[in-house]
Length: 168
Image 1 (cartoon, rainbow, N blue to C red):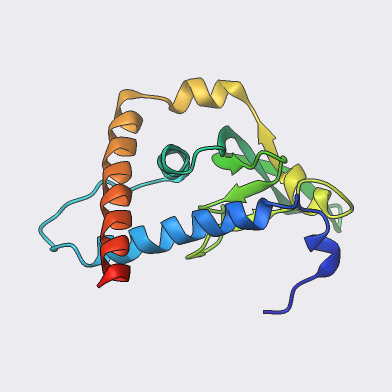
Image 2: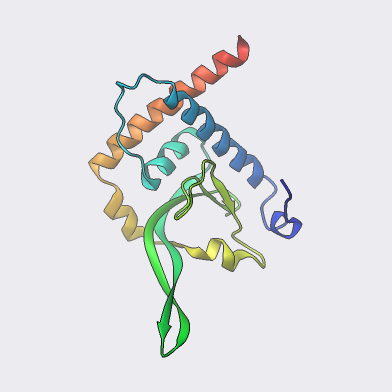
């Protein structure tokens, strides 16, 4: 992979390590879950559940709820104009303030992404994430807590399974 040094300089010194922890947990959980019997039924997991389950396993990351901002092209009077649009979303924040998005909006991503949240690329990354405490109040339902428990249990078993596999 070719990396942009200007972007890399915008992250905190440990942000790549935090991202790698999330990536590793995501991969072992995904691999473990695909090997479970087909009779095991799971609810669907959305960003709100995924972020909370990851934060339970990787202490030091903070869950933030709010909006992810996008742009829609509108045609008005023969001109193309940009109109902001948004959707409810949850993401993780590292101790230095960088964003890790394990379930990015509008992407088919099998891995979490590390998002620049300072420097000259912030307006193409972190500025698209708008925290809002009212989203937390809205999404933190009993059903969400139940789904977090399920996903956390799967992640815990996946980590145990991965450690046993490393030692055998």
